[in-house]
Structures are given as structure tokens and as C-alpha cells.
Image (cartoon, rainbow, N blue to C red):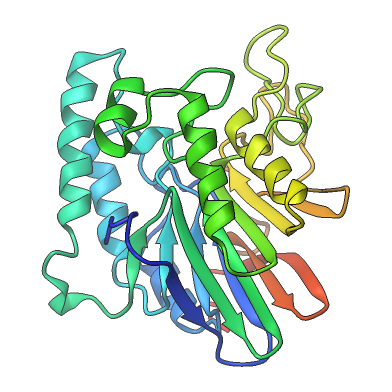
Length: 304
């Protein structure tokens, strides 16, 4: 996976008049070769993974990343909080540091790789189709949510980010650099402003009085985009699992002030139904008229 986040904007052209974005929420190891086979039959112009590939150990993250690297479509992977250093446990820290390094090296030799699969974060991606000119901004990677910077030492060493203020400034600069008037933000965690209740789309359900668990730097970037006349079509993230710890189902989509907010974290995304095993993802269609999104459930033997 290519991790050059300071390069020129990454451009993806659609195969038709509508730009079709496949969205895969938090995996937590729920990904295998059946998924690779199924997505090979889906006409998506770009795939976005919201992060948390493995189960918290380097080997599981590596296994999933290696499988993702065989996808045929252009693919963006946003690293989640489970895809980096766990500073609270030395053994896990060492394992995950090693794991991240190995993930980044997976595509150093691209001979066995069919498509363009890259990590994203603090990066700009141009989505183009006839009548469609949209820039996608990949926000802060590795977010755990809340009012503090997750993994500060790692973020400083890897991205030169020392604080949420630094992160907000980096995201505002990406907004300023965007050529398109229409924007889509993608992230691991959603923005603040949508988490007033534990069962809200990015509300904290795991501690009393947890409150809004969104990312303030992402919210500031969205506000900045509006302030300079950009139109934010959608914000796509995950992290806060749709089924809360209290067993309440969060909304997976919310529209507010003309922006579509999407939480893709249906966990587990592979589950047993009455008659088959089903695999969950989302599809967003971007056209001159705006964006549409729907959930997709594919049975184990279903491809198209």
C-alpha cells in the first residue's frame, strides 16, 4: 500500500457518468477471499475501507491487508485505531509497530497485485466522471475518537502532527488545496456535532456521560469548507459500531444542513442469516445531481 500522503492529488476516473464508491466499514478480521471474489464482480470505480482491519494483533492485520492488496479496483484504506501502536501495552505496542511496518511493505513488490491499493490519511483524492468533479479529503488516521489526539507520539513521528489543532490545520489546508467545489470527507471516525446521545451516530456508548465521541478536527475542516463556499456532499466514516453496548441500533446515516453523514461500522460485517452467510458493505453513487447511498448484503455465493 502506497503511503505517500504528500504527493500530488490522487485521481480516479469513473467508467461511466456516475462515480460509484464502494464503502467497507470496520473489518475486525471479517474479510476473506470470498470478499475479494465478490468485489471483483462489482462495478465500483473506487473502494474505501474505514479501517480497523485486524483484531488488535499484527498477524491478523497483516493477513487482512494482504488479502485487500489483491483487489482489482482502485482502493483506499484508512488506518483505524486498531491499525497502529497500542501505547498501553508494551507487548502489543511492539507487535503492532512491527505489523504497521509490514503492512506498508506489502506492496513494495507489486508483481502479485492486480489494482492500485493505497493507505490514505491527510490526503487528497480527485473523483472524476462526466459532469462530476468531486474532491475526496481523507482525514486523520488512527483516531480513537474523543477530545484528545490518539497515539500522540506515533502521530508526531509519522505525520508531524502534535495536537488536534495541528490536525485541524492540516485538514483545512487540504480543503484549500481542493480544486473541486464539491467535497466528500472520509475518515475512520466521524466529526463532533452528531453525538449528543450514546446511541447517536457518533455518540459514546461505553462509559457513563461519555458524550460526543466525534473528531473535533474533522468538524472544523467541514466548517472551514462551508466558510469558503465549498459544498460538502457527504462525510463517510466508521469506528463507533452501529450496535451499541446497550444493544441499541445507531442510525447508519444522518442528513444535516445538506450534508449526508454515513457510519459504515456494521460489526460484524459478516454474519449468519436464516438461509446463508451475508457480507455487508455500502455503495455511494455520486452524480451531477448529488449523492445516493444504500446498504448492500451479499450472500456467500453471490457476486454481482
